Amino acid sequence: MKRLSRLFLALSALALAAGCSHLPFIGKKTHYDDDAATKEKKSKTLATDTETEFKGRWMDKRVSELVGQGMSPESAKAQANAEFRQKYSVTNAAHD
Image (tube, rainbow, N blue to C red; front, side, top):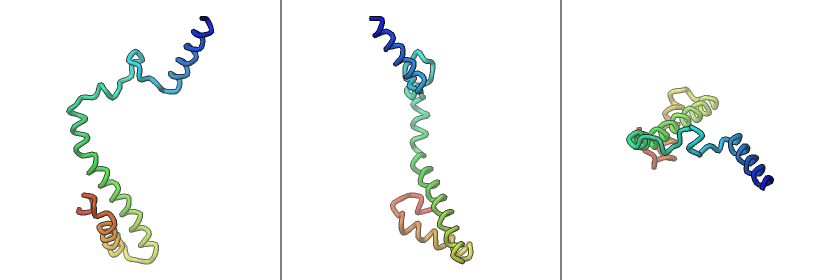
């Protein structure tokens, strides 16, 4: 019995040290405590925000590649935009 309690105590300490604190008595807020209205508001813009961020990063990278190959920044931006529209036409971000 003593051996079992030591094992339980060791496993509990390991779980707490590893960040496994989904237990309500630990005091950390879980995802179940979130307000439903806040969740709904976040989810409405999450896809659009993600696509817009992806487009911005992709455009920055492609424009810098094209400028590095000797294009003017304006031409590089126009070409990168056309390439993005062709390659990622299924996203809402491609239509901006």
